[in-house]
Image (cartoon, rainbow, N blue to C red; front, top):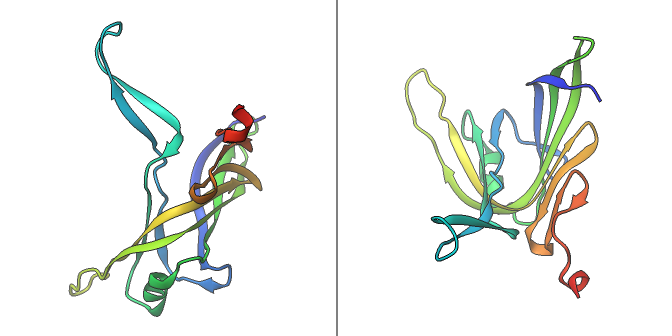
Length: 171
């Protein structure tokens, strides 16, 4: 498989429930962090942040808009709805050096946390920001699922493989 170099976003669209275009936006996808516990004591040299691969910390996403629109406030009642991002990613082929485009898609579900109405300033954008608590996210590149977290159903997958075994599978 050829290494892809680059990763610049060419075009990008943002939808609510697959149909409502949310407008000009910038999306900060959540940082996925496992819960950790500091362990220490006799037998080890110093403290260790022990990772629990079965528990993911809070997932927060932020969507920034240039201005205030109805869609900004539609997101406040987004419970149960799908936020879908579709992007064309421009990359160079490491072997042929040819420039190509690959699709990137991220889907999220969750609940509204806050709206920052922005700043009113002459000759400037309002920079409105919406934050959500993400309970479900899946990321696809080139049609292949790269990552999936479904906190309410205990699903954590990377490259199509389950990272969490079901409790029933352990016994």
